[in-house]
Every structure is written in C-alpha cells, then in structure tokens.
Image (cartoon, rainbow, N blue to C red; front, side, top):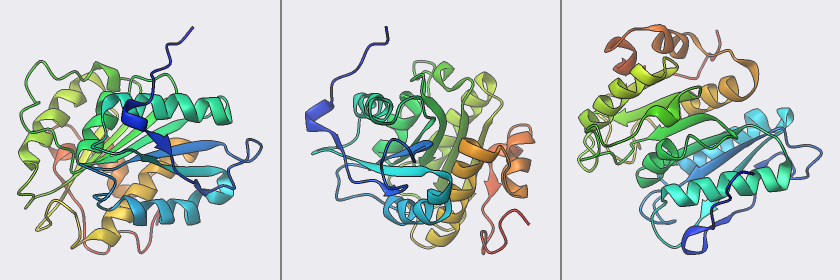
Length: 237
C-alpha cells in the first residue's frame, strides 16, 4: 500500500478553479505550489485562472496548495495524495514557482504525477550529483526561467535540466529573455506556455510547435529554448 505523507506545517488544498470540484467531473488535477510563502505566488494565480478557462470543460481542476511557509517536497506529496483521495485515479500535474518549483521537481515520483511545471525554481546550490532526477522518469517536465533572475540563478536550473534530460527525454526548458524572478515582464507568454504544456501533458498529448521542438531537440537546444514574444496568440497553430 502506498505511503501517504502527512501535510507539512498545516498544508491544505485551496478552492479549486476550473471543473466544479465534484468527483464526477474532475478528470485531471493541477496542484499549484507557491514560493517562499502564500504571499509570493509569482505567476501561479493568473496561470490558475487561465487553466480554469482553457481546461475546465475537459474536467481540469486547479488547486492552490496553501501553507504557512515555503512549499516543500512533503507538501507536494501530501497534496498529490489528497487529490487522489478526493477524485480517485486521476492524473496530477505539479506546478510550482520558486521553492514550489523545486518541491514539484522533487516530488515528481509520486505515482499519480504525470507532469511537472517548474517556474523559476530555486535550485541554487542543488545541481550537484546529490540532487535526484530519477524521479522525473516517465513524466512530462517543463522548466521556465527568466534570464535576468537575480534571486534564483537561471544557470542552475539549466544544469539541473541537463541532468534531468539524461534520465527523462521528455524534459524541456524555456528561457524568458530580459525577465526577472517573478516573470512579470512576459507574464502573458509564460501563462500561455504553461497552459499549452499542461493541457498537452494531461489530456491530448499534443503541444504547440515550440514545445514539441523543445522536447525533441537534443541538449542544449531544447533546454535553452527562447520564449517568443507574443507566444499564445495562435496556440497550436
């Protein structure tokens, strides 16, 4: 029987956006893991709204993971357990920002997790051989990082992505040129990229051309894919 992790420091699932939250209508769950605290969600709130609009009809529910301090691996694992308890055998995507991004990557081995979206993950100092990547095998993985991030070194996420790519070919990484840690300057493009990736990973298996190319390209090309200005205006075109 699977081990169910206890919630860390009072973690709980917030109200779902998207599908109405009943067991009969939810066919996939995105768990949104914020950064240093619930007051630093980065682009997760607009991402949740966009996922609700684009994926609600397909039964996608997006739950914020609420907690008093920065998201940890235990929070992510517990939240995945809770999603399965509520909705049954549905695929789960872990979508995290900052510390939540690292928690999402580390908790990817949970049996319900199908995809991981890590936005500006705080992987500084964690890119040596001690940082595990085997848990990413069999998952769809997207890392997004601003090139001007002064808080979480984008080069560290690149090095981690390069190691992850060796364990899992379904790994890609996009660089948001001239954007900082909060990914504010190109938030619309970041959100559109996240929606495209999540819907493809959870339901259709199809992605926009840039994501398809990034997944297929060998390192370093598929791990330094530039996020084009205006991405999302003609998704899947």
